[in-house]
Amino acid sequence: MTKPIPASASIRADLLRELIRRWRDDPGATYRSWFLWNERLKNFRSIRRGLGQVVAEIDAGTFGVAYRGSSLETVVHSIAEQRQIFKGADHAFLWKPKLRIPDIYENPDNQRAFGRLLHNCSCCDTAEDIIGHIHAIDRLAIKGLGPAVANLLYFLHPTLIPPFNTAIVNGYNALTGSAVKLGSWTQFLAMRTGILDFNDAYRDLLSNDLGAIGGLLFDIGSGRYPAPPLDEADGASVADWKTRLERARAEAQALSKTIAAQGESDRTHAEIQAWLRDLGIALGHDVWIAANDRGRLHDGVPLGQGCLERLPPAIATAAGADSIRLIDVLWLEKGEDRVAAAFEVEHSTSIYSGIVRMLDLALSGGDLHAAAGFFLVAPDAREADVRAQLGRPAFSRITDLDFAYLPYGELEKNREAIARFGSGLKAIKAISRRLS
Image (cartoon, rainbow, N blue to C red):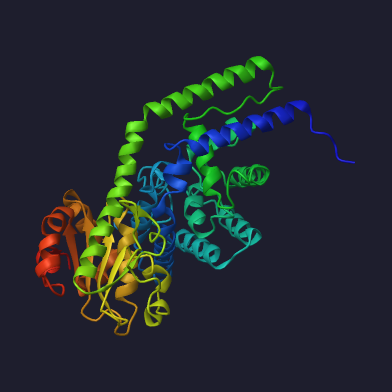
C-alpha cells in the first residue's frame, strides 16, 4: 500500500512547481537566457578540447608554473564568459601567492594529480567512476583545489555533475534547508545527491542536463527568486512567499528593456550569418549554415533556407567533423567538397570556442580547405579581444594559417558591392585585417 503524502509535503510540491514554471517563463532567468541559449551547446566541444590540451601539457611537462597565460586560463576564461551562472568561475583558479593556492602550479606532483583527475573523468562515463576519481584527489588534500573544479567536470559530464559556485550552494540550502558549506568535496557530493533527487522529482519541468537545475539554484541563491517556505506551509508563510514571488515577476517585467536588448544581440548574430549566407550564394558558392542554427529565423526566414542540407561526405567524415558542422558559415566551392571560406561570428560570446572550431577545420588534413580563408567576424570594437585571444599560447598554430578579422562595419558597408562585382575571396580579404 502506498504511503499517503502528508498535506504539507503536497502543498510544498505544488509551490515548487509554481516556482519552477515562473522561473522557466522568465526571459531574464538562467533557463531562457543561458540554458536555452543557442551558443551554450556549441561551446561544449571546444571546452572539452581545451581541457584535453591542459591534460596533454601537464603530461608532457610543458604546462608551466603559472595560471596566467596557461592553457587552463584559456579554457576557464571561456567558461567564465558563459553569461551569469559561470561569471567568476576563474576566481578559484587564480594563483594567490600569499596563500600559495591553488597548489597545482608550483607543485609538480599536485599538478600531475590535477591532470589525472581531468583525464580520468574525461575517459569514464559512470557516476561511480567520476566520484571515485573525486575521492582520489580529495585524499591528497591539495590546498585550494576544491569543488570549484566541478565547473570543469560539468562540461565533461553535464548529466552527472552539476555546476558549482557560491550562489548555487546558497540556493540549494534555501530550497532544501540544508547547511552545505563551500570548499569541501564531501559537502559537494552530498549536495549532488540532493540535487539529483530534486531533479528526479521535477524532471518534467527541468532536464537530464544538470545545468537546468544548476540555473534554478543559482537564481534562488543570487536573490532573483525566493524559495518556498520549508515549514508546515501555513497560510501566512505561503502568502508571504507568493508576495515575494510576485515582486520577482514585477522586477522581471521592469527589466524587459534589458532583456529585449539581449534578444537584439542574438538577432544581430543571426543577421550577420544571413549577410554571409547571401553574399556566399551571390558569389557562386554552396553555403553551409551551422547545424544548430539552420532553423533560426532572420526576417522570418530560416537561416538554412537555400543552403546545403548536409555537408559533402569528405567533410562530414573528416577529423573534427562534429566541430566543423557547428562553424557559423562555410562557403564551399560549387558542387565540390572543398571549403573556400569559413566564418565564425563572435558578437558577444567567447572568441575561444569559435577559434577552436576553425582550427578543427584548418587542421583536419587533406584538401578540404586548400587555399581557404578563415575569418573571425566581430563588432568593430572587438578587434583587441580577437587579437588577445589569438596571442594565447594555446593558439600558437594560428601563425601558420590564413586567419583574418572581418569587422561588422566593413562587411555592412561593402557587402552589396562585393555581391555585385566581386569574385573569389579577394574582396573579402581586402576588407579584412590579417591576424596571423
